[in-house]
Image (cartoon, rainbow, N blue to C red; front, top):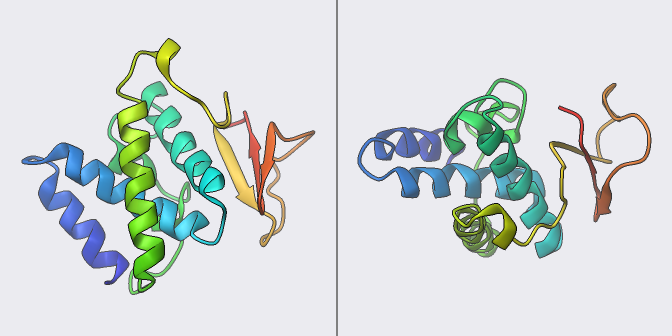
Amino acid sequence: MKLAWLMMMASWLSPVAPHLASQTCLATTVYLEARGEPMIGQAAVAEVAMRRREMGLWGKHVCQVVTAPKQFAPTLVPAGTRLDNIGAWNLAWRIAGQALHEWSLPRDERRYVVPHALSFYSVAVPAPDWAQGMPLAVIGDHRFYSVN
């Protein structure tokens, strides 16, 4: 399946099935950002997106947050990118569903992977200017920070 098709499907679902749209957008982000990482790293990526949504950073809905310009992979990779690793997609889907459930709970009942993290980057790319000081966490090839 192609990235453009998935994101179009999510926009169609948004008014009639917002939870399904959110899970589609979040799973797509987890897949593109961290499919080669351990489950905890994928969960951390989902958590950053959910924290931004809760704080209203770049949108009040998951799909708005992950499609904000130059914030997450759905806007950084070509629209024709194929998501063709079905095993990785299924895992990303489950992680996205779990993150949505976790963030539906009251704050004091949530289990956090990277508390306070609002940004991350992969060491596969040069460190961005905002990545100053020690990261909050290092999981796989990703560095997590509290900056936005």
